[in-house]
Image (cartoon, rainbow, N blue to C red; front, side, top):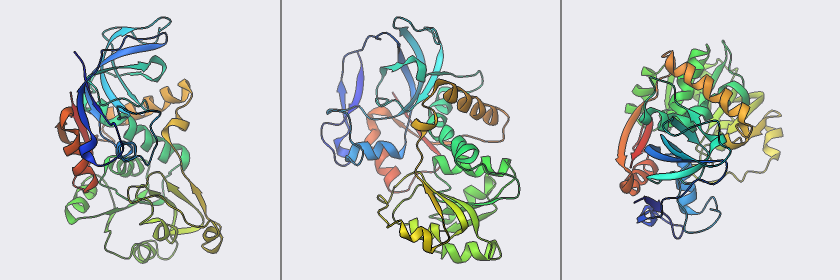
Length: 322
């Protein structure tokens, strides 16, 4: 017996249906993974609503999970039955068991549990490429992080602080402001404030070299206004809707750069995936970055998790338990 959440047509959380599905058999190059935990991410909402097009319908959404390998297909040598594994970036995670390309699986080190593994792969590896590759955060930098109490945001705050940066986080409530301060943020700004004015005040007019923004349309212009000349706007999500601004504005605001990076590109090569995961595991095991699983739902109740996520009621990471 195998169950999965499937979407037959794009729409609201009510489109997430808990259904019986066949237990797949691994093809060559694949491994059958029995999930112990599945990660919740905003990209799941994009696939559910149709903002991101699924390859076909019905579709099982979800990009991240952790569990145990039950079987492997021909030619698989990187993992074996019984291995504890985690992955990110393979659509189909909202299921009790599913097949995953073995080259996308990373073996979980001892001391990292399934909940933490499921919560950290997509969000943690995203944080890794954001602060280590998209823009190399270094000691002395002052950076701005939107949605700083969210899954990726809270990891970026901690990691950037670990690298020696001064971190300005933007959040929606005083409770979230307290949370990010606990995790190392030097300044916690509320979304109701004039963010560029506050950044100007904090930086004594210098502004920041990089802004990490997963909110999208609602914050895009304000984010550009926080950047120093030649600054980098990292738009890595669009929770408030896609950005459609004329690029001419980049010239007017100081020859700025904008990038729209994705984890899939940064971990497309197996070597990059393994290096990214290794660095993530190291900072978590050292205690420099703590992965907070603050919400847990049964997988069959994924709709409730989506409602909470879209209402900005969640902090840190959320996992779904099959």
